[in-house]
Image 1 (cartoon, rainbow over the protein chains, first blue to last red):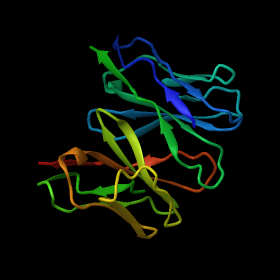
Image 2 (cartoon, each protein chain N blue to C red; image 1 turned 120 degrees about the horizontal axis):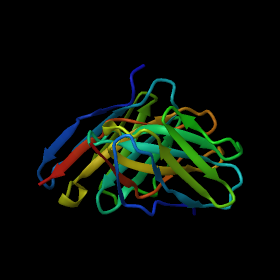
Image 3 (cartoon, rainbow over the protein chains, first blue to last red; image 1 turned 180 degrees about the vertical axis):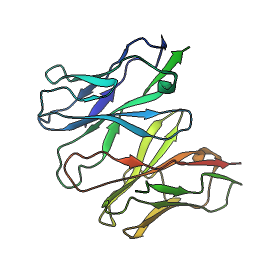
Image 4 (cartoon, rainbow over the protein chains, first blue to last red; image 1 turned 120 degrees about the vertical axis):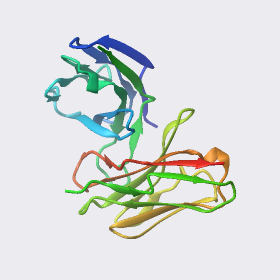
Length: 117
Length: 114
């Protein structure tokens, strides 16, 4: 079974600084998908970024980027120029290759990020 | 486009009562998921459907929980009888059948069983 580990339960950073959230996973699959979701205090689950394992290029979405290291099974999220609205719980998630019955996500335990004004 | 719609947003009820949570997935999405989130256990997948058919219900805690998807635009999660330990936030999510696409979540239902 796949596992996803987020080793930083809590982090805090000053506004405008850069912060990196770590995520490691365990799988024997060669092709899969990785996601970061954000859950602000409003409790919505919001997709931040998506990475395809067969693509070497790291995904980016505006101030959010990932450092995907396939051999190390590592998928960290970098937030640049952090803003107060980035305060949230961040979850890393893994999806197996797209065969029937494999659509479910395996989530990490989350990292609570606080942006300090 | 409307996102995943869940109702009610909050539910407070007494132990032993039947609780029904509702979900309308995004139009055109053919997979639907029910999750439960608690501080102790994090996000747990309860059950998921593909084309209205239950695929994996191994996460359903016990027989008091049941889920249905009578058509592509509606699903329910029912707890009968409810217990205080069922108190949690319940999320519904949906996704397309396209390869590796993300799940889109509803705003969740906060359930409190007194």
